[in-house]
Image 1 (cartoon, rainbow, N blue to C red):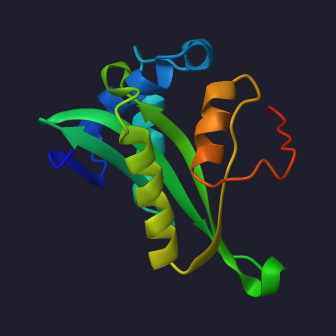
Image 2 (image 1 turned 30 degrees about the vertical axis):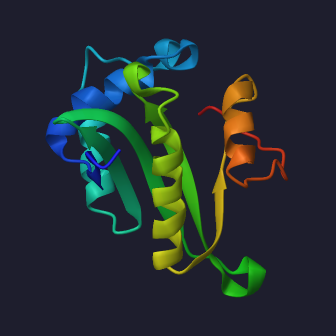
Image 3 (image 1 turned 90 degrees about the horizontal axis):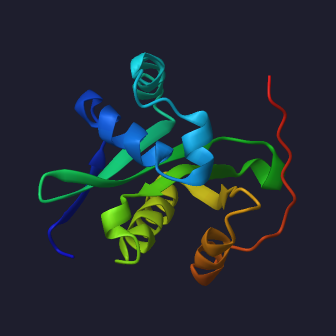
Length: 150
């Protein structure tokens, strides 16, 4: 996999990122690949925030994976900084190739470089394959998460 590049996302990557976000049963219900406007606005906000890192994995000039890493300073845990991994997606043609592992390892390594003492993520309760994947990479299902739509 030496031909893989993990780099910061650019505006030209948004269409491919949104396509991956929409390419599963949950994403198909909540994403709108036909209207990139909201995604482009959000991406502009993200790129102007130094605590946000949206990255893409590129192979052969094609975006094949993505994730968002957020760095969060905090008071708990003796003032520890933590990171949150969100929006992990792998292109359908790359699933099972080890790319997801490489992306998560990149995020964990980058979290360490950013001074984080904890890396956390959430995963929808229906994504049991993803839960096994994260546990294999050393993550623990230690908390119960709650969300409220506004």
